[in-house]
Length: 147
Image (tube, rainbow, N blue to C red; front, top):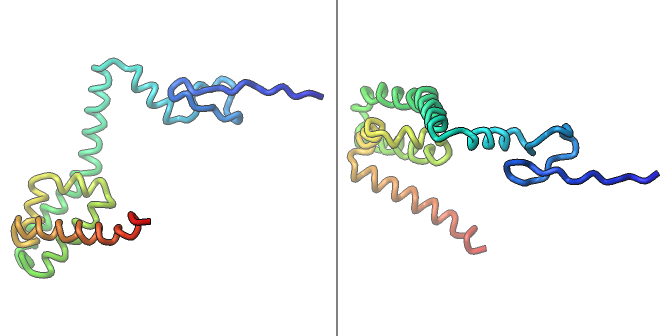
């Protein structure tokens, strides 16, 4: 018995191979390729409307709760403004923003940035704190970079 090898099917979007376990009628290697192809088939106006809906959803569901919580807690910040505890809290926010894109975007808004300024004891203190954290991260990465 001879086996004939089926020709390798390629994705219509990325030209990557389609897995042999997929249906014979599959046009895309992955559901994400199908989504991207669908997006790029849209007109510029439809893309703009899609992006607007996506950005609005991201703002309402992901960023606003963080910003609201920061602004609510700003009322309680007065007792630790500029103290070592306030600087510690600001430093924790700065460190956490590197691992959470939502927090990173939320802290770019002026109101949230103002809360961090107050916690650290002023804008100069916050900038010094950010620079210090960045320097520590870079020093920790030096052995990795040298290898």
